[in-house]
Length: 201
Image (tube, rainbow, N blue to C red; front, side):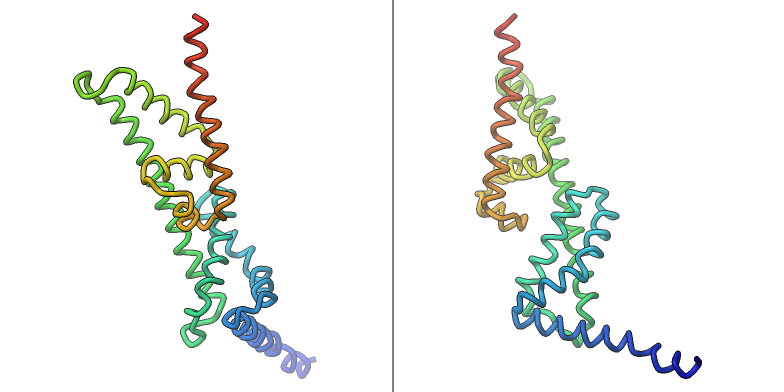
């Protein structure tokens, strides 16, 4: 029994290391099957890290997608002599989580700032109707689903095109267009509701 233990114990780590090295070579060589295996192997770990640090399942899913897209696009930068593939992916994950937290802070700051500007604008600086429109817009944006709010905030406040938003967020362009279209539709409905109510009075 002692002999068997000595023979079998070190085998698994060695096999794991060889397998990880094979996957790393496959990634660098743009082997899609190797990349799929990499996702199966580390996808849950990446998602768990993102979910714990962000506290939001949907954001964690976005970060997971961005991590593996970043790994695929940046595969030429992987250097096995600097560390194993798993550690490299964890490093990308940490950077993407930091980016997600920074983006969340920017969104909240923009919305809060717009609200403060609307509250503090004097009668000589803007017409009452413009102040009301801005307050309605901020309130309507705050009530949108996160993805739609993020896309529209980038478009409204940072003047980014849909292609630039797709590049920054890692979302497919078609998804960005869909979020923008649905978000604008919801904004229109939310903003028009008070006007309809006023008309009924």
